[in-house]
Image (tube, rainbow, N blue to C red; front, side):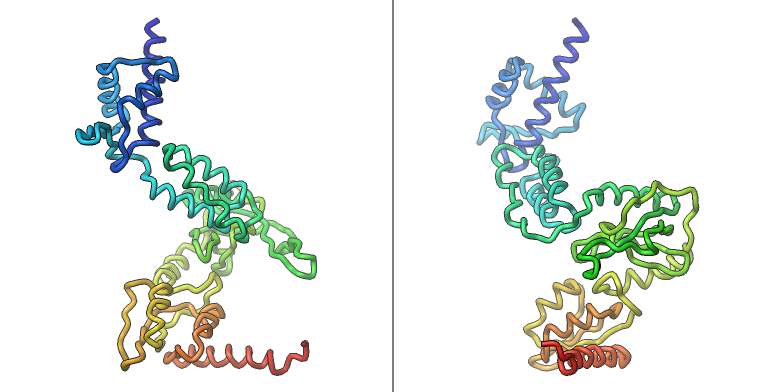
Length: 336
């Protein structure tokens, strides 16, 4: 009977903990009557004194910080796992992520909803707002990311097959090296434009691999990673330079002139810490470390005559070449 009594108390405390964490918060009140009704539904009626003892136990054992509001006559939870706005942010991030499949997004959203109270759970169902997003078709990305982290932590290599899509095969998968396993030394996972990329050393140089295009990722192999010295050198410039895509080239300190109405676009791209210097009443300049790439030049081109790369000359020349090749395609291509 003594063991049954301990089990009974443990179940009661668990019910209270789950309900308080889901429904109480700094701005959300839970009435004592709600808790009494909850326990009664589970055939665990309690007296007021017992409930107070349970509150003390939840504080001592689980660290729940409850505070009674004398005006609203209810309890606040000062350290909830999540506030409603935090849950909405997490659910929105899951639902809008391209690398998470629709099925996995639903699964993760359902788990997050368990932390939500009855007043919040309905507002977390936002899948219809992002249902048309192009999503990854690789349902194992979440597990593979965990496996890559394990290999990095253990300083070991991993193996995988890598594919891309080609129109010639009807958008079917085409595998690198005829489907042979690639063995690389993983160093970092990077998030860019809604996708996860692995930054790894392939024995010759560092490359980026999109994680949702990696298949059959092995458990960490019994081979120590290579390229540590190169990574330490690359890591400093990589962290310094603004990368516009995962295929960036050489890093330059690029000076660019913008019209004033593009200030918001510059902040969105480079962050609030970027320094903008007024040139005249209509223009400002920035200088930013950038790994130049076709994506960077395409971004510049979207603003037309409202932006101009001023220096260094190699980047100015690359921009001219980018624009000229685009123009040549339209002037010389006979296809209508």
